Length: 122
Image (cartoon, rainbow, N blue to C red; front, side):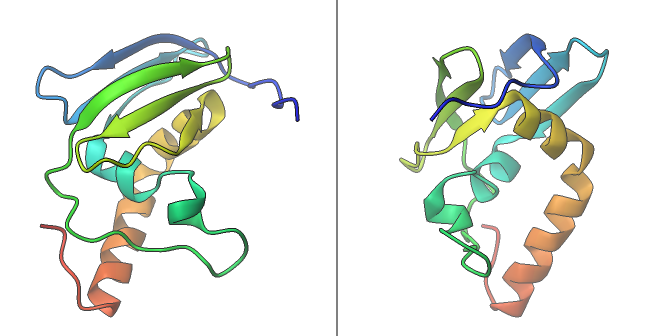
């Protein structure tokens, strides 16, 4: 399976000193800082997203998760390893761009799912 070419390309990807966020600057001028918590709870992995509609999980207790490592995957994505051991999601350039643009909505949805399940961020 060949990945679809990215519509945006990162010019810079930088991990914060505290390892709690990732700064990404794209070739279209868009810049974003994504928290490790958001990246972890919205990981594009099957473990989080499931294998089909309605299978998404809501990982709890991830408020203090950090990024342990970042590994390039081809020329289309990065694999992020988190301090809780999760490392199966591939974050394409388009996913990182999308998450940056929708991060408030993604966090609000995550918090609502946690509340509905009577779970906590920490």
